[in-house]
Image (tube, rainbow, N blue to C red; front, top):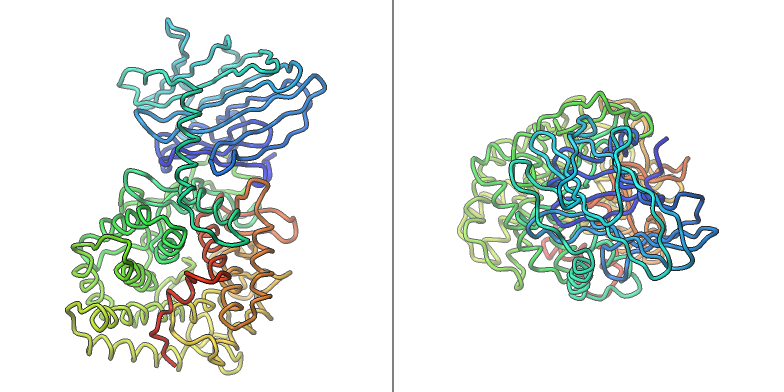
Amino acid sequence: MSRPLEDYALIGDCQTAALVARDGSIDWLCWPSFDSGACFAALLGSPENGRWLLAPQGPARTSRRYRPDTLILETEFETAEGAVAVIDFMPPRGHASDVVRIVEGRRGRVEMCTELVLRFDYGSIVPWVRRLEDGTLKAIAGPDMTVLRTPVPLRGEGLKTVASFAVSAGERVPFVLTYGPSHLRPPREVDAESAFADTERFWRRWTGRCKDAGLSTPIVRRSLITLKALTDTPTGAIVAAPTTSLPEALGGPRNWDYRFCWLRDATFTLLALMNGGYYDEAARWRDWLLRALAGSASQMQIMYGIRGERRLPEFELPWLQGYEGSRPVRVGNAAHEQLQLDVYGEVMDALHIARASERLPPDEVGWALQRALLDHLETIWRAPDEGIWEVRNGRRQFTYSKVMAWVAFDRAVQAVEASGLDGPAERWRRVRDEIHDEVLRSGFNPTLGSFAQYYGSDHLDASLLLIPLVGFLPPEDPRVAGTVAAIEQHLMYEGMVMRYDTERNPDGLPAGEGVFIACSLWLADNYILLGRRAEGRAMFDRIAGLANDVGLLSEEYDLQRRRLLGNFPQAFSHIALVNTAHNLGVHDKPAEQRAGARVTA
């Protein structure tokens, strides 16, 4: 039986990440990078598909926390005999990647056990394990190698590595599991205590740069730490989540691989980082974006791999039963081949905001690339596409896609007028105005009193809440107010927002999913823009209250079962939370920063 997502905490080294369950089991870890095959895949299968348990032998009461301002997890177990803590972390990547686990005795004497089940390639390959002369345990299969170092005597048992030991108050017993390529010598030994001190210092220095966000500072800081943990340090890429195939509806097929980088996250990510005070990370994300896009404008994709890879073929892993039986389990994402016009506006907006920042270094090739993208967009913006939600039942004239095409040309005009860059501003202005007129004429449904999901439809879509946030119309425009009211009436359940109605509006998959966390925060942003600040604050508090005990959010929430749904933790949810927190503040409001002065009535 799968554990609720709320039971998991995140540790990571800014190149990959692991999920640690409340009972002391690491159930998910892809090595050596976010998009590698998992060596612990129990999250999507069973313990036989790989996990690492470290816990008391008998019953225990559990509590946990992150050490303040860090990604170091402390899980405390209270037993009848005493208390111990398991301290879990991954030191920021140096020569190799390590998972460090320190068992600290806090009271009495507690009998402990560990069970290490290594299964490479998403739980499918049993490695060959042998003990080296110095006691190190070495496991190899194909290109993958891990070494485990600990003073605790280990033994093999049924294709697992197990041990029993006792810890008394004041004792600290280390376990260090390290990954390395199998054709090289085992990575050198890491001192667990030194690694602990270095890791704590790294995270506290990093969080020390975080700007104050008023009453929301603690949850904002935790969200930014999570965002940093989902960042690949060498490239600057930020993955949408460290997991694949965690379902949007339990037992259903809406299970996608999110270990990639979506262009549509670009602007909100930049604003969250810059407003948080993290300009270096923002610049590295901007630079990753430019490298990923480099090439023919006609070949731009909606998402890329961590290193900018373009081939992300989607396939299934039939040997994994799926999270709570949710099949198929997928690797790769076929949506990378879709046409989604909104990403053109997203890229132009992100680079526009980066260019306007005095804290980001200028880029050397960005404007030439943007002009090429605009030339291509000018030839295709009238085409139907698969839209922001990546539907799998054909292309349509999605309203939000056209709005973001407008954004692309609007930001280009601003670049010429405000920044003095070279370009055919008059032609771009004509295209911008043509798109604007078409959206008002074809995207607005007078019967609904709201913009519709696609031209000629009577379906609603939460992405339409972004219309005032990107400056397409001012928030006080009655068509914006009507759209907010319609979404409140038809897409809002128990105070939270669905993306769209999958029952009435089929998208190529069986109906049913949770409410969408980011969309709910977009509604909060609209409330703030409309002067309904108390409602915006209430929505923010409601969403912040969905985070688990260590402050992590997934993509969606199941109102019936009161559980988090979707890939976890989800960068987009945390980014939206950070931006709404700043919208509630006094300065650095992303909704105003993004809309800017170019609000067209």
